[in-house]
Amino acid sequence: MSNTRSLREEHQVILKVLDCFEVALTRARADGVVTSDIFAPFVEFFRGFADRCHHCKEEDELFPCLNACGMPRDVGPIAVMLHEHRVGRAHVRAIAESLPAADDADAAARQAVLQHGFAFLEMLRNHIFKEDHVLFDMADQMVEGSAAAALADAYRAREVSPDYQQTHDRCARIARELRERYGSAARGTSP
Ligand SMILES: [Fe+2]
Ligand SMILES: [Fe+2]
Image (tube, rainbow, N blue to C red):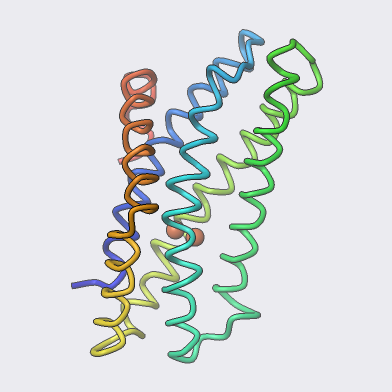
């Protein structure tokens, strides 16, 4: 079994929420309504599922494993992916911090939510594409045998921890709700 399969499956969940996010951002830009009611669930999903569950598996398990197999950490694909995780966190933080003022109809805060939102959307879609088509293909080639088994065990150990499960379940519910809210408009953008 591919040692990146579970991460690739998580990408599909994230991509579907990004499709919903694009619909929400496009509507907000068109009608000028930017509120916590619309965007707080996305912030919670991106922080919980995309970052705390998924990116941390990459950063704490996959990337060190690739590093141990000979891929450098400070240059090349791992360095680029780590940098993009940091950029993504900064965008999500800026969105979260702008929402209270956006709720008070502050024009600059509304603009900041939209600007950081669209930038995050594009960045994360490209990031996932690079992982799916470059880094993960390399990982599937490089990590074999006992190293692959140890990596699978490490993912499982994370997935059964109560903190991970709570976050994962809450965010899976948010993803379902977002699909119900925006899914018909978003359908077809991602597989
Ligand atoms: Fe990543
Ligand atoms: Fe990823």
